[in-house]
Image (tube, rainbow, N blue to C red; front, side):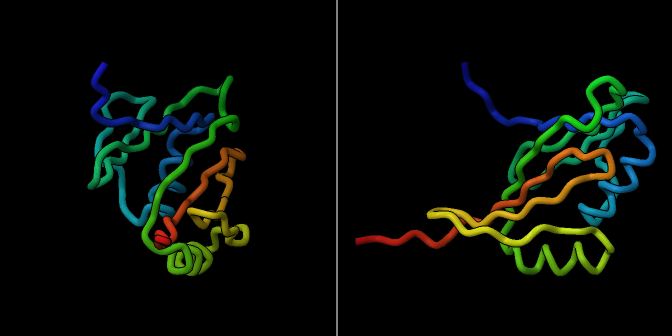
Length: 117
C-alpha cells in the first residue's frame, strides 16, 4: 500500500453553519464542494479536511493540524471570538485545542526545535 495523503473528516449536523465556522477558523473558504453534504479544505503540503453532514455522528470527531506558530494562531483565533485552551508543551510538540460549536475536537500542534546531543 502506498498512501499519498489523507483527509480528516469532521461530522456535523448542520453543514452550512459549520462551513461558515471552519471558514472563519481557516481564514478562507472551502476549496471544493463535491456534493451537497460535503465541503473540503486542501492544505499546501498535502492532505486536507472534509466537513461532512452526518447528524448521527456529529460532535464525535477529532482532528489534528500541524501549524508553524501556535502563539500567532491563538491570538488570531481569539481575535475572531473563537475560544482556545492554553498551550501545552510536550517533549516534541506544543499543542492547543479548540472545540467547534458541535463539540468536535480540533487540536493544533507546533513542532519544537530538535535537540541534538
